[in-house]
Amino acid sequence: MPETKTPEITADQFNRIMAEELPFAHEVGMRADVIEAGRAVLRMPTDERQLRPGGTVSGPAMMALADAAMYAALLGRIGPVKLAVTTSFNANFLHRPEPADLIAEATVLKLGKRLAVIEVSVHSDGFDAVVAHMTGTYSIPPRG
Image (cartoon, rainbow, N blue to C red; front, side, top):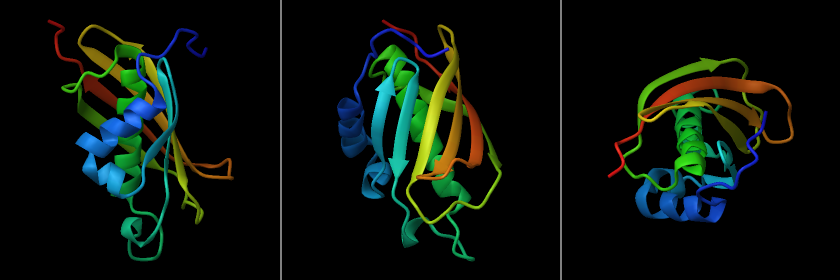
């Protein structure tokens, strides 16, 4: 069930964080389209920078998008916590992406005091098929 509370960070605020502190994500054109409390939708244009031999989007590019989406979804719940970091990451590549922007939809499944479990589905813009499914755990530093 979707979260109904106000997010702790906006898409514009997260896009500024990417520009200032996640230069790779910003340089390849990643941007947050939506951030809600516990849910985020990020977009990444695809071009030759993300392609692998054979002309498809590389796994590392999709993983970077998914990890950024996880971070955005988490910050939507806890606010701008710089030292929240990925502690585990699992990726399943399901289909070859279509030649379009990639969209990552992340949802916080469980939020504890020190750990958060987050799920991401990636699809090509304009297409329903999920091309990759990722899960990850983020470590949240103690508040204080």
